[in-house]
Image 1 (cartoon, rainbow, N blue to C red):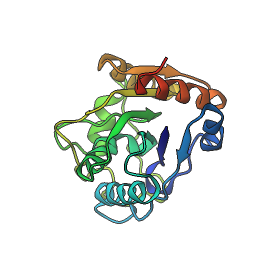
Image 2: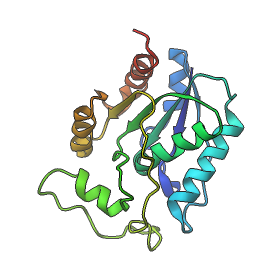
Image 3: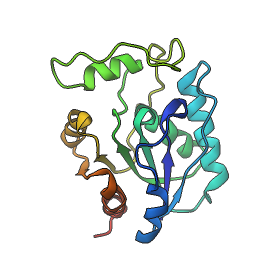
Image 4: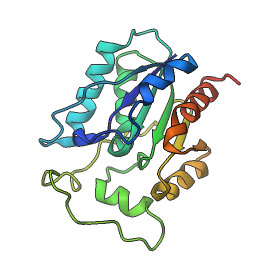
Length: 197
């Protein structure tokens, strides 16, 4: 079983370093694509294209594969999955890790943050250092027939509890874990999505 660990967007570091190495202990081969170049517009489309090319380069076409998106990659997970389908590379499951969910209707990142934040919460509108202009306001690619495989959500950041709740409302499997226990929780979630016990 292969878990493609899609990194956060804009080259942000993973919040769960060492996750890929620890998954091997559970019989899961973790692949971490190098996705860069999304600092230039169109940000989302560049990320999806580069991530998809990396998956095609790193993973055999017939390998049982799950896509795991962390942070800002979450809303793009459906588009990356659609690219895999177009390349005849089936995905057995999708997992979001501390991320907002893909949302229909061509939303922007600002729209996603506004609709998936706790009711009454005002998302931070300050642009962090290094974030390119237009990053939060460009329409994100959406896929009308996503998800095409079982989905799960792994929560290690309590600040995204509302997104995990939305995933649960969609009928997804949701696990909560401390960051140091994330590999075990992710492995169990992947086995569940694959149809194991």
